[in-house]
Image 1 (cartoon, rainbow, N blue to C red):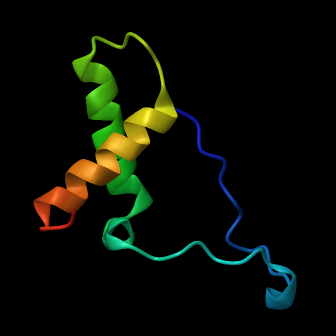
Image 2: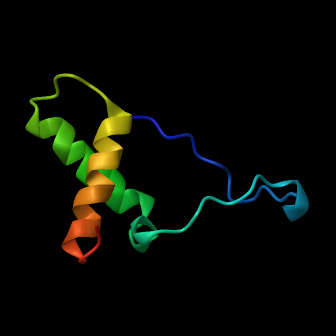
Amino acid sequence: MSNPKVKASQKSDPSKQPNPLKKDSASTFSDDEIRTRAYQIYESRDRNNNNPDEDWAQAETELMELVGGK
């Protein structure tokens, strides 16, 4: 699973930034927490059928359910 990283030292004009994504319950969790759960899901399939986008979405859903989300 590969997520590009942005250097923290990069600064740019906020008016040139893309519109921020709509905040939802998933924002309760850090990317690291979601990434960890997504990797656990991947490992539970014995590392077969690599589909990081689906694993990420499933991890977000499961974590939201833990805190009483959808």
